[in-house]
Image (cartoon, rainbow, N blue to C red; front, side):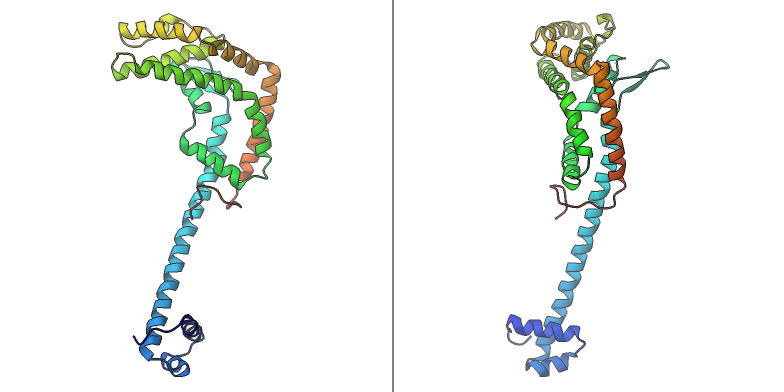
Length: 274
């Protein structure tokens, strides 16, 4: 390549090249070496290709991002809001909005986790959906829904976290610790819901586990959060509250179906590929 040339002349080389001028004609017109013209034309082509490749990769990543948001809106988010349906011994138990269905202890814990214990990824997707659909009526209904379930979410989560921390210090094998934690929280959900709960049905796996359960269970029931959770649970079970939550659920479902059909979304969120 000849001597280095200024940016203005490089731009002229690229413009003449796009217009179809030959390397010889460009060199003669600008008074520079043919090798220099060839070098800058080739570099320009490579840069164009790289830009196009990056653009294509970004476009595909953005479409994948939108697909994930659509799937979250159309299925996962709606599932998080739906009532519990528990099948136990051939019997189907349908819960109420905002509360896990009563039934087998470990099932009620799984249902509570479905409703309230979201993964970090799901929380980020919810933020992304909000950023891309701020004008949707869904968020008006969502905020109203949250206003009705926040107390229950807060109090039940406080006990859930406390039980988890309390169980960690128990001297049991890990397989018994998991069972102990879930049985303690299941007992909490059932009894604060005024549902039938029999201590004899608790199965930790060994006598030490049962001893820990009785100890933790008494501590939970004697805590200040217990009566608050009872009140929040009773409020959610009221007929008027259930009618309101059902109406909100139906409205949110309709809006989510609309969002799930979108191919692309306006705006930008923290998950958008850059």
